Every structure is written in structure tokens, then in C-alpha cells.
Image (cartoon, rainbow, N blue to C red; front, top):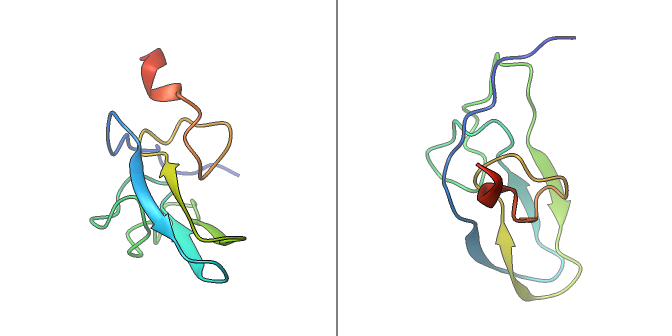
Length: 81
């Protein structure tokens, strides 16, 4: 199945405070206006957000370049540009 191109939404990760037990939707398409989270802009692209529940309250670095191999967490892929 084909899908639209993934857009690079930033050149650095977004530091986010997660709350244990909360559900989050990370934007995987790069089109969201509420980066790094999904706002529904992926509709019709064939791409879906990554939905996850925080296992603990912590500050994490969420990927904005959309090239990470550990979605939704940043793995430093933005440095390989």
C-alpha cells in the first residue's frame, strides 16, 4: 500500500513532559500544526499517528524529523541530514 510523503516537521526533537497512564498520539506524517502531536492532518495520506500510553511520568524527546527508528522517541536521525 502506498502513502503520501512524510514531511520533516523540525530539525530537533521536542522535549515533552508525559504523565503516567495518559494516552498520546504522535504525528508520524509531519503535517500536524500541533507538533509533535497529531491534529488529524494525516487524513487521506495513508499514514497514521503512533498512539501510545506513558508508562511513567517523565520528560522525553519526541522525534520531529519523522525519520526515527524508535518512534515516537528521537534516536538522533535528525543529525544524519
